[in-house]
Length: 511
Image (cartoon, rainbow, N blue to C red):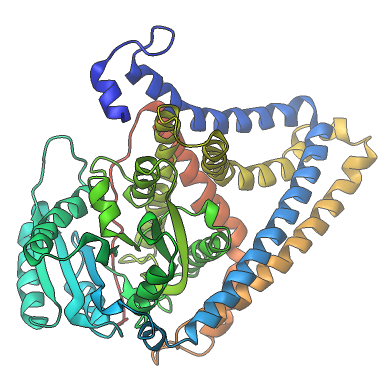
């Protein structure tokens, strides 16, 4: 039974509290933990500044070890990534029996994206190495954007007529009861439409993979051949989603240095998770079995983080027998870019806040794990810890490093002036920060090696900026890391729920 079904009954559940009240208490926990930590840190800086200095040194040591540990995974995944790029996946696919029976559905949601963005995305699908006649494209549009998108839809259907096995466009009605205006509701509506076509054609559900791509997602030419190969060779292929590595390269040479650093940090985060698939959730553009999507009743239509929530829907439906399989192949998307630098920074903040709102999965997991006795307790605790610790550290770690590395020396300077530890602390902290630069340098080198060719309109000196931009990382970790994460968790704690923010797409040059 889901949270909604329990809430609908409104029967007392725990100590006489209604289900709705209990669920609200679960929503409060992440934000409460963050604010308790930050307030406690401020108090300790004032009442026990020497202890605050001891803590920040130990905390910095811990994070240095953690950074180097994570970087070992990033480097390992990067090697897998480079190795996979040298394989002819179509050629390998043709050696596997039954590959001709596999079909792909690509759901492409759009809301106010420019025509050029949609055209480039669909054009990339025409260049893949998988047979196009076994690919079905669904352009999922919104009724609240009808005047803007209907003309685009007509042009695209004319341009790509006969290119794919099917090309349909859906229009999700606005204001349906129980829905949140956002991606989840749109793609769920579109998937039901393509299901009718699949049923008419009699295609077996177990032979279909569905990929949900953001409107700006440029598919790697070998993406679907790679995906099909991994799918056919997987020992439990109907009980796993398939997660590629997102790179934000469509407009990377034109974007601001700050937004490039944020985008690349996301890529490296997913690279580090790829070698630890027990930690992986689905993120942004990804693929999954059509059968699994049917079994869970499509995407939840009233949440912001539908991309990670669909994994949890499957995980719960199959009693823990559902995983995420990493794919060492890229899908390229846009680095955040607005009409001007102010709009770019604003859009970047709002995008990260939306991603950080994935904290809404924590109460959902606690609630549904409690009512599912078939998932082992150890597995439940592992997933809950990964979810809670990830969002908690996202919000608190950079702030604590900054706050505790500076504040104790200023608020109670007279108290710490007699402490030998306090005198040596700045040198110690500086040494730890220099150690962390090793990971930063490795990240900078890998980010440059991943870059697409420099467009002719971009001056050659921009290569230097692609290295130097990583000096902005401490700033981006606070402004476009901790602060939006704190806001997202605070909103959930206060019951000031977020709606779905669609990141503006703006390009100065073609992809």
